[in-house]
View 1: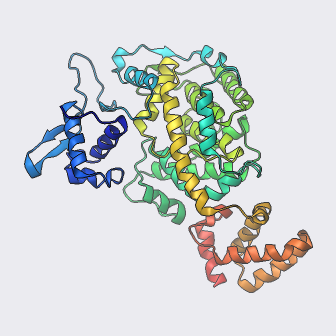
View 2 (view 1 turned 90 degrees about the vertical axis):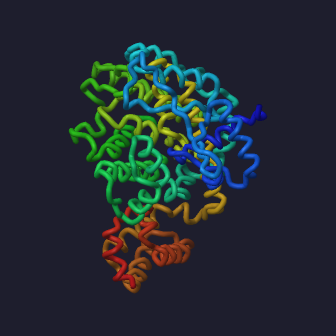
View 3 (view 1 turned 60 degrees about the vertical axis):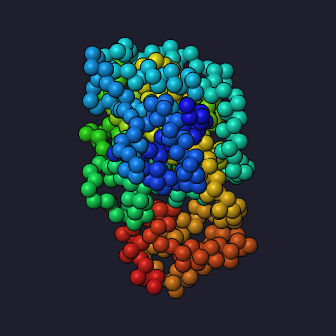
Length: 465
């Protein structure tokens, strides 16, 4: 019998093989980034073990040998809906025993799951700073890996440093979890150049643009955002813009029943109770002191309540970033989170009021995002305190120069007059230098931080040249 291999190795090999739905050769598997550097002989032993355990199948012989992921066999005696996700036999290494149990329960056919409605006791039982969804050791670990050394700076400082990267990553990943088929590169071109990709539905383009607008709102008002109806309703309005049938429902708590496909859970239907529970969720969230517990709490309870007619999961993912933004922690971009795990975690909440599967997904997502954005932070270096103090004024000056199509000479004269009128004498020269640097470095890929449209930039740049 081939020797046993670690769970993490099993996961890596299986994930590499999944990239080739019609079968992968050894060289195909070795070409995947996570497998590069693995000796071919070691990989062959791993493959033999996975075949022995039934986690892989073999097709062909000799040089034509291909390794294929076996799908779960359907039980012909039960009804299995064709639109239910196909599951694989291997669990990711970050999934706990509790998470695996819930995963099994929510992957059963709909006919084998018990219909259930909204249970108020689930929310009522939570007491902020006394009830904990995240264990103390987990909260401490997330605080450590999410720390970037900016806790003494104003809220949102760290976000402004990584905003351009996060706009792309979070917009793409959150949209991908909704089934959006834009690629990461297509998302980047849309957000930086305004170029919609061909072959995609207009709804997909709108979804990504809405994520960008919502994240910019959180960035621009980092000190004022919080778990209150103003913030959450406006977040929904931006994410739902041009995507729901009734425009007046954008940013408004629903007044009609809603249903969710693919689950036996039936959301709360009475409008007065929906609004009451919505306010209760926001109050509880605002009372929670730990930012990661806050983030996970809203990821659990906003989708469970379904306070809006649609777009509830997207609202919860963006809202989960609010405490991270306010505490200058690494943002949550959902990098590496698979749709089947995220949806499975939510089904555990909907149908069982069990948070462990979704908690595993959340912790994995936080760790994955932290690894990504700490690298970005190290590359950026420490923020310039002067620039930080005047960041809003810089954007205001740049925006006016571009929108009024000022040339270099007119810009210099106008800035000199403005800084003399509004800035302390000791700061004027440095501020003028910063504006000059900003204008010379302005391009289509960084105009979003000044709330400029591509058309405004294109109309201005000839005047500058």
